[in-house]
Length: 208
Image (cartoon, rainbow, N blue to C red; front, side, top):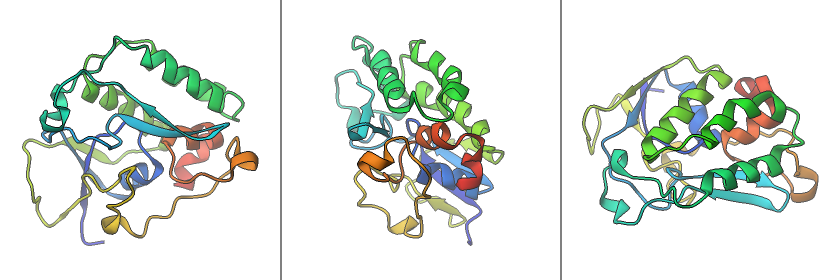
């Protein structure tokens, strides 16, 4: 590995692929000067429900988000999305081995109102990192660079639900572990870090 640092966009309760990168590289840069991009994990995450893969999407206020600076993107709080997301999480993981262990960690986020997507994602990410024994340094970018220095691996927009931009991370293999509805739906790889935490608890960092 030539690169000592990695550059990523911020995501909503990110996937295992994303979190594995945070644990792998000693220094991480999070892009705070990009424009919002639709169809990404910036405002969505994937969990495993009784019906299979479930997408949780944060509604955004109307406007051309595609051209809007990420820190200016506002959440549409006229929709009860937080209670809906938490209900879905409870239904999916209420019987998981570590739901009670972590529920009180995440529930406050679904009761507090946030106006901006960035703030929501950033606060949640900082809550998640200690749960996976993350001690690596995270810095926010000071400006947008289309081509960062060679010593920084640019994975912005690579870890995507579209699964079309994985060339830069072709070696990633989602770890296997026991999931709540695996017997019914089969194993679903690379879900939100929530899935791994609720299913494996403190072992999550080792599994990743």
